[in-house]
Length: 68
Image 1 (tube, rainbow, N blue to C red):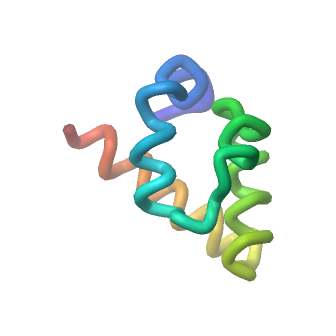
Image 2: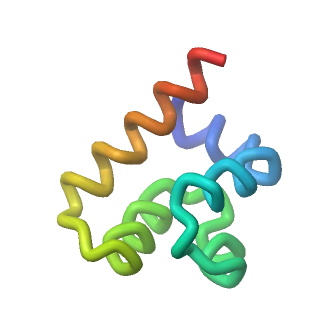
């Protein structure tokens, strides 16, 4: 899944993202607005993860979505 798909499907993905990363606020989701790098930063911030770990989690999430 690439950046364009994340952005184009953002409204549909917000609920799934909120389920996966429940510490993200509605304000965070509004700020992220489909931008993978901002999502990564917010996950790092809310969960205290290193950049590579946050990126790995997003990549796994994207792979799971692409299998549906």
